[in-house]
Length: 161
Image 1 (tube, rainbow, N blue to C red):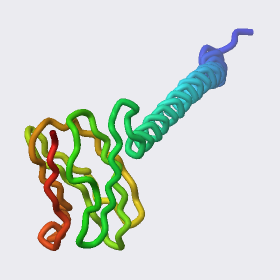
Image 2: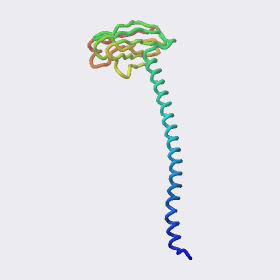
Image 3: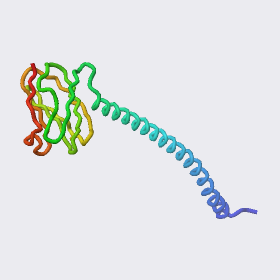
Image 4: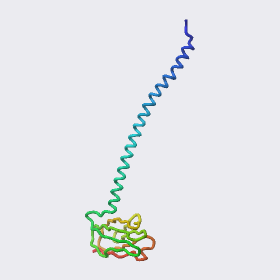
């Protein structure tokens, strides 16, 4: 007895999607595994980048409050209407250790021969930061650039010899 062609075609047609489905399932499983593996590597890399960024931030904060070993350390106290610090210094690398002992935000700016430097952000009450500068001979103006603090007395002239 001869099997009609349409029955064979029907049988092959029915088996073909099952075979294709198995092949697709296997391929999808491999691709999913590969994708998950790549994602895991990216997460690991991101974790390393975050850890490195955190280390750099800690170092930056440490540098902001720690004078360089080769710099002369000068204590500065800021309070409302007053800057307490020496009015005469020698030349060279200087680390101004600035402490806000006032109740308001303050900043510390020094202007002089080839120099105009201040903190990027104001110091809050009871906050301390270090400003490194290389002082040359001359007269420098030291002031608090916040609001009208300088006109209220937060300024002085620094002589460097």
